[in-house]
Length: 78
Image (cartoon, rainbow, N blue to C red; front, side, top):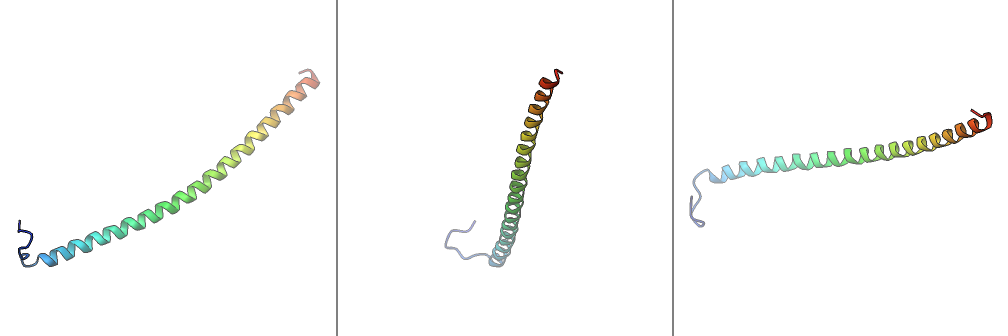
């Protein structure tokens, strides 16, 4: 290992430039994946909200149907 102020070995700058370029590509890829995952997450959150609303509506319908069934049984003596 070279001391901190020692001159770099020949080709070291090129090697560092290649490594930096590779890291920059990886960072750009990571940022792209994060954006895609955030968009997918937002879409899933919208879908879940819709499913929850439909579930609530179905639960209300079921409650009403049970009330109607109970009233029908009480009227018909069933």
